[in-house]
Amino acid sequence: MSRSESRTRVIRVDQEGHRDSRADMVATEEPLEIRVNGRRLAVTMRTPTEDFSLAAGFLLSEGVITDGKQVSSIRYCRKDFGPGAEDGDNTVDVVLHKWVLPPFHYQERNVLMSSACGMCGRTSIDQVHQKSLFPVADDPMRLSEDFVLGMPETLRAKQKVFDRTGGLHAAGLFDGRTGELVSIREDVGRHNAVDKVLGGALLDGKLPLSNHVLMVSGRASFELTQKAAMAGIPMLASVSAPSSLAVDLAKDAGMTLAGFVRGNRFVIYSGDHRVVPATELVYP
Image (cartoon, rainbow, N blue to C red; front, side, top):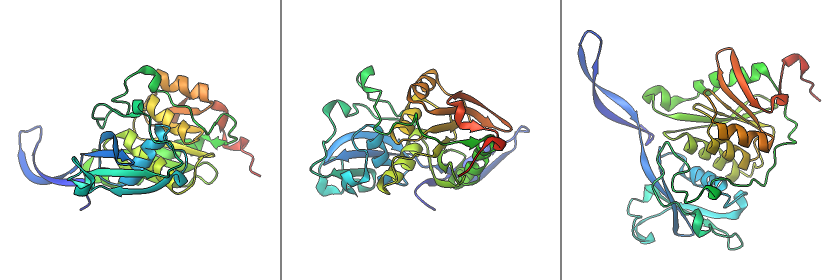
């Protein structure tokens, strides 16, 4: 059993009042302190897997780094790293190369980020929006409608921990040219799942992620749309609804945004030119 899930004793009750005591699995939720050059930047509640990718993806989303080459090392902190690092598996330090500017003071989060909120701890509205170095408006990606409709089923089939716990969000990165699901991550926080996907791509030197689609199992919030934009992803799709700010940001960035992707239909809120009937697709 991995650290992403925990065993607990439960009582199952049915409509007839029958009770059954048994062991069950629940998704693990633990705090992760993210440090940069030894200084605390944020603490987030997450499922303890892919912590290095999560930290790198978070720094990408915050505009601190844009390339894996800017990272000198990522390591778990131990007791010799000072107060608060006693639990080494829950404290990660990202060491940047000397020529990379460290985070500004205003980028430090002042409160614990819950698994439901990736923007928690921001001290002003101006700090919420980040400008991406990877514009997506001119990305030439074109997808068939069938491609979009098939993504949720493909993503769901790979959610192994969700099958056992029923308590995790998922984010998947699809190659828009081949249709391949190239990366999937699960977490109690949907923003963490996205950071894990994007951070892994950053550390592998794959940014910008042109010709890719980010598919998420929850709603499409402003923060997820911004994370996709920061990685140069031209399309975000979700099984649920987007927020008004997510739609506005997608339109401003020239990103394709699709919601309610489930069953045999979906809704396009921005960038409909990238999704066409299969008969209209022309491959080189």
